[in-house]
Amino acid sequence: MSEVHRGVLLSVVGMLGLSVLTLPAGWASAGPLNPPGGPITPTQKPLAEIEPRIAINNTNTPGDADSLFRITSSGSYYLTGNIDGKSTVKCIEIFAAGGAQITIDLNGFTITGLTDIRSESAIFIDGDNAHVTIRNGTIRNWKNAVEHFIGGSITLEDVRAYRSLFSQYVVKNATMSRCLAEDGGSIGFNVDGGLLVDCSSINNTGAGFTILNAATTVRGCVAISNDGGGFNLGQGVAESCRAESNTGNGFTNPGVMTNCIANASTNDGIGASFSATIRGCTVVASGAAGIRIVSAGRVEGNTVSSSGEHGIEVAGGRVTVVGNTISAAGRNTGAFAGVFVSGGDCSVDGNHITNMLLGGDDFGIQVTGTSNLIVRNQLSAVSTYFSIVANNTSGGASTTPSTAGAWANITY
Image (cartoon, rainbow, N blue to C red; front, side, top):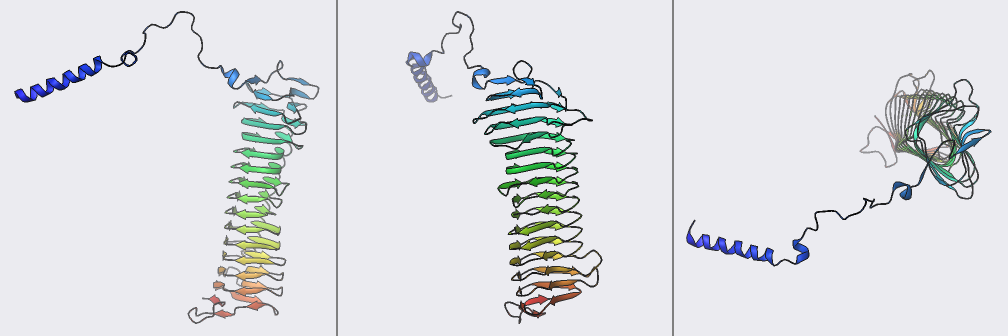
């Protein structure tokens, strides 16, 4: 190293040393190395002060003549282990009113009743206007897993119910997330108002979901192999739900349905009564109609394939059927149509209907009612493209789109 470079380096080192020596006293010291004298004490609040929790047991929550445990006041409660209850009395009864706030953490444990006698519910909520949250546990072999049918509200998260004698969940004003109902003797979810998200109902002898209040939304829920149909929606809302291999309809009586799937229903894939909007859904291999609607609704942008009877059936008036894709409808014996309209004042517009050759006597669009509009549909591989009675308005049919009118139906 040259003498010049060595001199510069020594100057820099000297400046750094001087800077360290002139730091304020508070910066230069790291504090005492020895802890202060006296006993060691906590520096934070204990859990009991942050979230006071009460164990469910005979001391804290003693039962009465018809319950094993009874909760009567607001608080955060939890299980400390599995419970083998008596199905002849309620396992946990909540009797609190006046806006009580109650949380029960099942803590991953199981509440098990009797297999032969199931006359009471595992968790029974009584007392008007209580707000109850139950989470994280399993309930087996009771009359109902959770029963709540009066005022207030209930929140259920990550609760699993098996083999209830009747409906597994009977709840009102409910918010339910990631709950399961399986192998029950009746309905999986019997709900009077609320929101259900990512819940599953499997192999129940009743419907997977029965909604009693139109102010209810089911989102991302699944119904599989239930004997009473998948979803009975009670004019409620279904979003991104799936009905698979249910006996009966996949979905019944929707108010609004979007992006749902009905597969292998023994009856209709979707059966709607009135004022329904069915949009963006997929229906495959239904035993009867793919989508059946009675009156005053809109069926838009759906895909229907391999239905036993009509692809889309309109049994009443004032229904718009627009932009749907229907293929291979009419698998059953008889004459069926891709779109069948027996009502009036309906619009059949811009649908794509194909592969209606399975029975040899099927129709692309069949209209037996009057005062309907049939325009801009596309039909291919159909035994008979149209069967339309008098007193309806049609855009006509053309095999040449380049010269057809704007309202013409195209066959090819």
